[in-house]
Image 1 (spheres, rainbow, N blue to C red):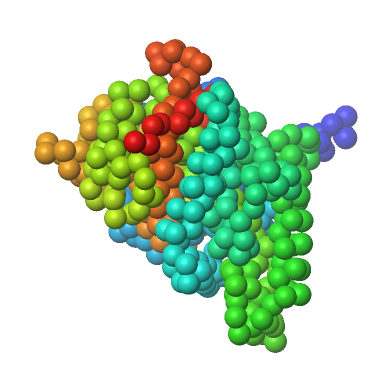
Image 2: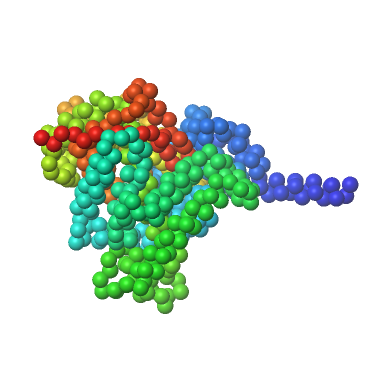
Length: 494
């Protein structure tokens, strides 16, 4: 009996401590939201279709700013274009912190340019931007690299001779080679087995991170981390990728010429050597590995996933594809390579690419932010350290900015005269100080790859357009395009 009482009071005290942690002392009113259960948080309000559905349902009741407890952890949700902009732009410094994504926390542990905070993040971001600019816009412009890679892709697609194929391997390979040329100083053959293994690991990992299992892990990671699950496979995949990166770093170390850096890794190693006597330097091995992993993963998966969705949409809406073909023929013709200067003369194609990005909604709940100090926002108090999700889906599907957000319609980005128009709610790369640092390269890739493919090929599906299903195979932190097959048929060049 006495042992039972001791256990009872131990459990009771544990629940009280969790409740205390879940309700931080506030110097003002916290955002509204459903009342949490001890430890379980708002599990009862979570929709079985995933976190995004849950958050959108709660928005209807609580408005654009509300608080949800993911397990015992309070997290603030920002919905709508105005709320997101007010936080990430108008109070940019305060909302510039990075929160944790539980499924990858064990991999990064706060290192690397995406998941770092404070002075570490500022130094790594500044270094990454300047270095990528140097190697992207230096001796050979990034535009030329993308053009060359697009021609490699065209040749690979011609070899398929119009057979129906899953396009994943092609889109992965070409986008990965652009970031590889900057980070590793080389491109890889599409047939390279080690390269293809890495790309498969990226695809698997992005799908796992976006899965329902990972969303549940986000709620109860402190408990579930001790059990088998997707989080362990994510970590295992990451370790294999890291092993490849470490081998590459070692090879760079052996051939390093401090007077003539060839790529991002060389530049980082030179800075590391320069500051090796400083015990507080952020230029050390772990930040190098995690930053390269961040750039490699983000530079590959984001653009390739967008293109996979894009060409599925071209199969679904052949009349749109036909108009893009017509504009390409008029502006570029069949013989020369598409270039960035063409974009201004091709408003319809540009609008289609914008709409692909909006509709594909790659990171629907955004990467988690964190407030860096106690702050007031829209009349609510957010204690320092509060994690914040800017729900990008709510902006990209904002009916105040897009007439029919649930439909794929390039007219969302065209004015009455057919010219491309800016839309304030178009924030696929997020906004503010944590905006995607590869945005410029990604926009170049999307235009040059998309136009090069459609300049050379017509596309066909084994499924009738009206039967093509656009439902993602996973929709969590990321949105993963469904698996499909496509045929690339050579267009006449006369």
